[in-house]
Length: 385
Ligand SMILES: Cc1cc2nc3c(=O)[nH]c(=O)nc-3n(C[C@H](O)[C@H](O)[C@H](O)COP(=O)(O)OP(=O)(O)OC[C@H]3O[C@@H](n4cnc5c(N)ncnc54)[C@H](O)[C@@H]3O)c2cc1C
Image 1 (cartoon, rainbow, N blue to C red):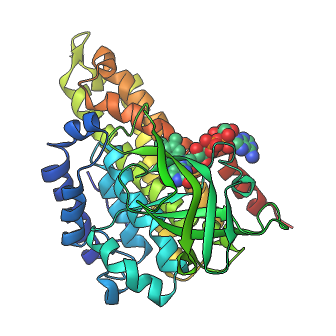
Image 2 (cartoon, helix red, strand yellow):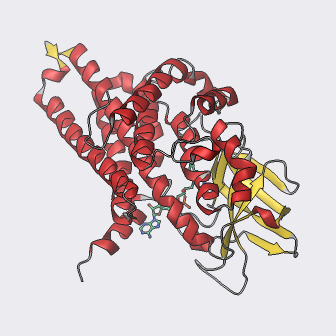
């Protein structure tokens, strides 16, 4: 059930309801099959592009609607109600984690090449930053890109890349300056699937998010032309950090949608299931645990929308975004733990929705910035001089 927020205009609410209707009609009846297949079918993504789901924050000249961060958070929350977070993350990596690199750092001619296809869902994007030896510590990445005057030769490997098997265009971080280390000397490149020297190493089998495809990507003397360099050479680390803000906001909003949906399922289950002569919901130990979780989800939701609103006012609320990622990543797991508990043995059986939601939630305290790393960002910005 979607709840109110003063930040949601009538237009955004209508859009959010349209997203929920899409999820109810097109996703929920079919996604069990997608979970088994390990991917969201391309036709579904094309359909979403046609409807206009993929250009929320993007300029009208490329087919977007320029609606801003609150609308984006509302979209992510609505996708979170699907109960299939693998579906939600497939979409959100495309719309809010990978393609922003093009829209925020790309030149007009780069946008001219790809933007319309991205918004139409004809071209699905991924973002390749993490490596086998560099995850939380982005500055530790080792993939290199060496210039030959006309283009760049990439060598290295990337790990855990969402949309890695079936995506078409990847925003790839690589080191471009051997004289610089750490956060300096990193640049972003666009690499299209099928480019010689670019291959999928292996498809990764996961505990949850099973309909989202995740892969290891290999770059072996993979050559891309100069026009595929995104943004300023050697300044890619800052672009990555900037784009992380949107990524973390939508992961938080998605988690709020998931948590509320799990609570709704559990209210229904505990009201219908009886034990010791009364519905489970009559036990104070159960209803009060759910009530506290509800209070925490309501509070998290308002933080998400307030922060999105700050972004729409032109601010860069890094502390609030980091709070959201830490808070929502943990909260969604707390909610799933208790909701599964109150489903009893059935919660442990694979045919129940809560079993999948429990597995899907786990990675949300890790991916896109682990809780501990986010708390460091909050702590650094909470200290009063
Ligand atoms: C399903 C999935 C999809 C993903 N999709 C993508 C993608 O599309 N593109 C992409 O680039 N990456 C992607 N990732 C990578 C993801 O962002 C990283 O897994 C995450 O940043 C953590 O990095 P790591 O796994 O290397 O863990 P590590 O960096 O090795 O950290 C391990 C753990 O140590 C703790 N830790 C780390 N640093 C600190 C610290 N400073 N203080 C205290 N504790 C700390 C945290 O608990 C952390 O979970 C994905 C990951 C998964 C699992």
